[in-house]
Length: 233
Image 1 (cartoon, rainbow, N blue to C red):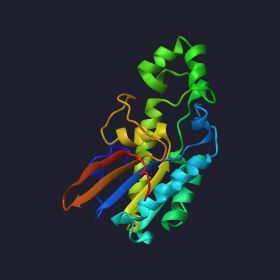
Image 2 (cartoon, helix red, strand yellow):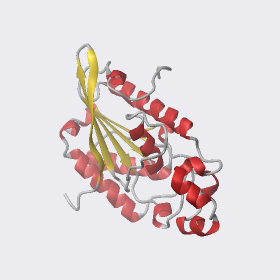
Image 3 (cartoon, rainbow, N blue to C red):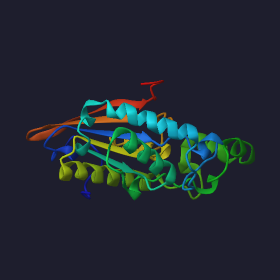
């Protein structure tokens, strides 16, 4: 990553030689999600519902134009089990190669609330709860800092962009987590604080289009934000 990079903008993509679509997907429902637990770096497996969500998303991806040639699509995943299994099911369903694990795509550390349930923290931590509502994870002791998350998001984008260039990809798909997806989104706006938040549902999909312009910064656009799963295909 260029040390001078401050945000993911048109200049960031100026070395691309062809249009590329970057797709970010949250993992399917995990046992932690089903139980209302702050997972952070704890590794909960997918539920059966989460596995079905991943397969459904894979079916949808297979039908998109930029996925018509699977060898020109790169699939990447957080190392955590719930994301990795989601990516593997997407690959199996859509006919992509096995996903490459990218450590930088992992979930944020949720600090002292890791493993706790929403209902419990609202009743146990009366002082922390309003601070969390006002500052999100910046208010929680031992949680990953905003600056660390911003830099990790820049690093992730740099890696994915470079993969697109090196392998001549038309599509780059990355499976990550609700907390970290916030930062993959906000670095494209240069936003360095938690708010405003964006909704990220299980297997929600974000599509970011990049179109190079010779001798100019690339055209970039968030085409879809938190696209829900289709009811059926």
